[in-house]
Image (cartoon, rainbow, N blue to C red):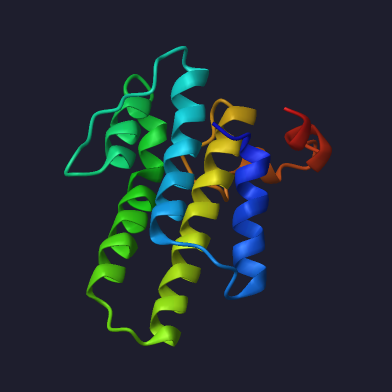
Amino acid sequence: MRALTEIEQRLDDIIVAHGEPTSTDELLRCGEEVLEHWVAAKNLQPTMNKQEGFRLLALHRQGAQGDASFNACRETCRELVYHYNLMAELDDNPNERNACLQMMALVANHLVLFVSGKMAEAGLGDFCCSSKPLHGENIQISEISDA
């Protein structure tokens, strides 16, 4: 399992490059790795089970147990799965496929930011990544990235 910073860097490379070679499988795996970090931080073994055909959704379910605020990223996980499924239905139009991959990368990046923030601030999640604790006057960016 890669570090969250490595995952975030890979996603940034994909987003900035507008066409950095990637696949839906890689982007889905990035989401899974992010949730593996959250589950491991709760001293649990990340599940290998699937929910509705996706391990990502099973990991989310596992991570949300006992922490209702973690449900704030449920729709982010579902959106990642939606775009994964959408790619299977798209024609071979490279512009449409690239746009879908870019959206998947953005959604996966949102998941990284949410989980990173949640790990840095235990109460984060009630208001997603625009939560006041992340943007408070007394919190320095270096404090978050060092956590």
